[in-house]
Length: 237
Image (tube, rainbow, N blue to C red; front, top):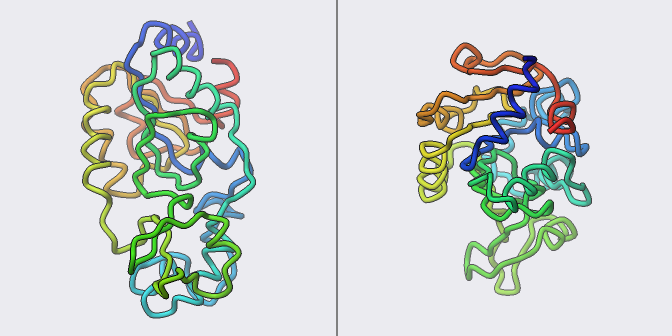
């Protein structure tokens, strides 16, 4: 039996699927990832992206931070792809218990997924650091310079920057979902960014599937490995 047939059978037999995804899930919607040749890390700015999207830099040079953020990290106008759509369908069918994502683009929800744990936050949520008022992503995109609330406070995206810790509640829910999964599909992530990558160690089952174009440090632990794009796999599911 070939690998895709095995995966189809596992999906058919599972009722607590958890999907753990990274940037590779969204690249097929046209959103660049961080590490590819045209990704964020190879763009020409005065500072490395890791520096710009750190909490320290955000505090020290907010104008520069928001210029980079609007240009490179605010993916508006993109549509969900086949992977997002299949996952939403599985959830509606009662087969998928959660999506755990490292992405901040909100495309899983746009496709119809309800149970989505966003480890690194979302560009769609923005709050005034003074009064806590909610602002849309469009507000942040169209504001001049540093986006300001009516009260005068800075509007900060609900995105986890370098040096900031992940939301504890989101981590706990993700761990619980992965621990209880009967099929764990990890896709579109290099599994090199911690603490997110370490979450798959909580999986207790024997159906760990890895889908990524390049090899990952966890390939040897997986029960099924695909080194190809997500679209080609999910279009067959």
